[in-house]
Image 1 (cartoon, one colour):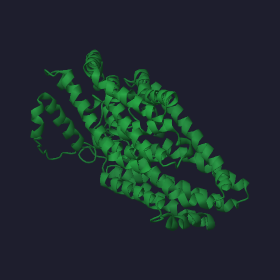
Image 2 (cartoon, rainbow, N blue to C red):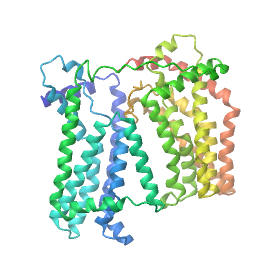
Image 3 (cartoon, rainbow, N blue to C red):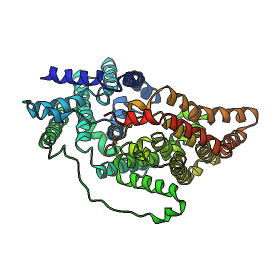
Image 4 (spheres, rainbow, N blue to C red):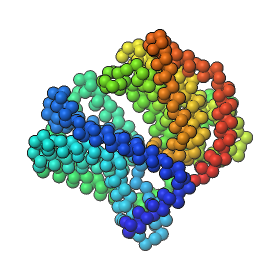
Length: 489
């Protein structure tokens, strides 16, 4: 039966209407996976010697001290990006196939997920280094097995709480608060968690505890999916009571206000769009990696501009690059109406502009790290408004991926979001502002670099009508290709 399921997956992959696009996407994902594998491998081999060189304690105990953050970040990262076990179940319900086998296969697919395998490239070499440095083999093996069990516990926790947004938000906030509390020396959570991980090393047989927890989580996930594996149960679409919102204050903007109403309702009512807003909010804190001096390699003037672009452009990138995919479920209906592309694109543009301005305002706390930090954020916001807002709309014309609004698991899973045109449009978004700053920085000084980037962004307003005419033409040219793509499942 396992061979049969694998065969179905294989045929589904090769017979897909987007097979050619998917092949290139898989190649890009494979290259990205190789990069992260190399990073994890380097960390696994070098972590012991780096900690030893810093002389901050026993390398194993230091890793145990911060492993709680490692696991917490892994869980948050999984929730936002890991795709859930998907099997085309409905056709199988008509066949004499045991549901137990179907559920086991679906859950088994997550076991070999990159989100699990990647961690082995850190823990395996790190454990080998520990053995080479004379640590007792039994204790190292016990510690290693316990940690790998906890990684897989994260996997099945993510499966079970996948649709529990409130649980995720609470956990993410607690994780951020714990990190901030330790950074500012208010409260150190590692004082209570480190002894637990030390126990797995000091008393190796305790490694059986996380494995028992893992078995319990797998059984819980298995029971849940098997229980809901019915057409009138878990597979049925949820029906919710419709609630009307007038948003009458937008009527003054005419047709533009109508589109803005639809976008606001879309964001409030759907999981995927709310996730885009959440990602945009979290990106505001991305600058802490660059402006606090905590990471030496990022302590440079060019990285500040890079950070400023991301701090203010989180929503712009997470939402704007998927225009018009947000409306994919009713896009054919829209195109059959007397709707002007200019008004439709303008509504999306104003939405990302408002979000960028709000992000720039919320990021004023970077003044604490000096005027240059907030100057980078401010000019990054201006550049996003004047240049990147057009580029994300332009790139959206080539992203022909229908979005499932009730799920947020395709942030990296939208195969057609990656192609030559969208990748080329990424260069002026990220590289161009750094080059503009570099010209001003080396010719005159840092202040001139910031002014150059801001002026370049302001020029975008001067050519707004001309740029919108060009983008409108691209959307009209791609219209029928987009309609065809949205019919694919």
